[in-house]
Amino acid sequence: MSLLQLLALQFIAHFLTDYTFQPDKKAEDKNNLGFKSKFLKWHILITFIISWVLSFQINFIYSAFAIALTHWFMDGIKKHINSHIILKKYLLLMK
Image 1: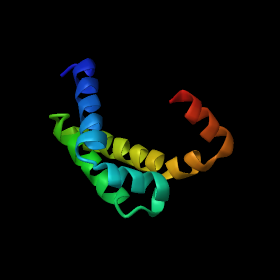
Image 2: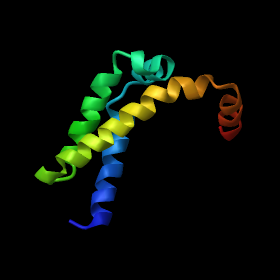
Image 3: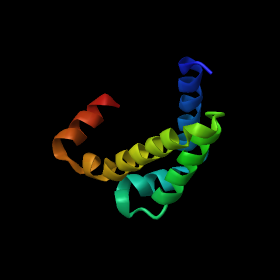
Image 4: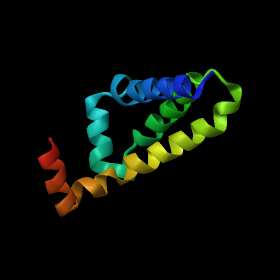
C-alpha cells in the first residue's frame, strides 16, 4: 500500500469517526467538557479501532495508537481553546 493510499484511508477514518459515528450531542459534550467528557474515551477508542482497521495492516497498531492519542489530546484541550478570549474571537471570524 502506498503512502497516498494510507493517507486517504486515514482521512476517511477521521471523517467516519468525527462525523458519522459521533452524534452532535456527544460532540458538543466533548467541546464543553474537554477531558472531563464521559464520551471522550469512547470516541478515542472508536478512533483507534477505525484507524487501525482501515489501514489494512496489522503492524499499523502503533501508529493507530499515536493517532488516537493525538486525537484525545486535541479534543481534550478544545474546551480551553474555545474559552480563550482572543482565540474565540478569531474562531468566530473564521466561520
